[in-house]
Image (cartoon, rainbow, N blue to C red; front, side, top):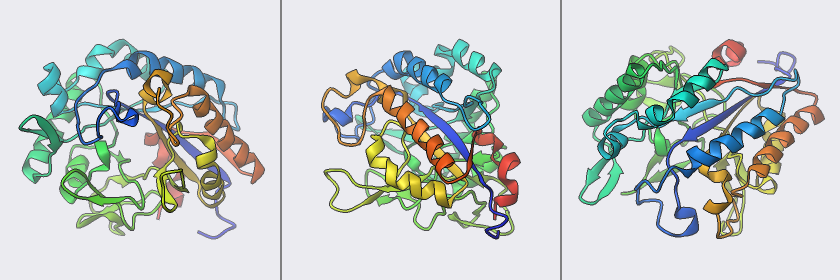
Length: 324
């Protein structure tokens, strides 16, 4: 695509990962202990986020329609009796948002119980079984998702293929540049582009010209950041709850270079009571979410680009000609 052909619109996707509260930011536990601490984010965080989203508008004056990634998975089934616990407990909210045009998407966390701890499930046959059972439970509850995101950014060739076989059109698990492989985490997105691509069947991280699998990967946007505990700059995803001064420089660079911006936030990350101990990265303040969104829209104006809020499932329709 030539510079003349390059789009002058930034397509902004706001995604919310709807899952349990996590207290490890306060050093109450390590992130590797995958217990469920509570659901305060759903009860108090989502209403705060909805109010913020009503305050911002793109170049056309439209408020955003959000892509809500909702946990539906094996751990919830074992702990609460139903993989669709969140969908069931807040069914009126999801139905209301769906009727308003928001996207309800699939967000399974793939765990298994080993002793007293929950650990990542990595066995291919169990991974695909969990995915199929959780996905079909979501359908049974009246939701037919088109988009997915695997919890903890885990991915494998088998998982990507299974998502496609289930009929999902778009996945947004990728975190470009992110890599960690040890007994606790299995994250490998080395070499993954910032732009949407069709994953290769033998390497989910790279583009397949034949589009053999058929599912489109739309990576979460990552920008270079640095906070007090970093020895050097690090690539982090654009989490709207992060302090704006941490994201600002990277956001400016991304907005000038790319035409798709995928942001993320977790409901509990906008609650002050979740961040009683100051954190150099996460604000725990809904005002910072609004500040980041207004910053993105303002930067689009500064570089002569239009801003356009879209849902994840709209990516193909909106920017298909730009996908290589």
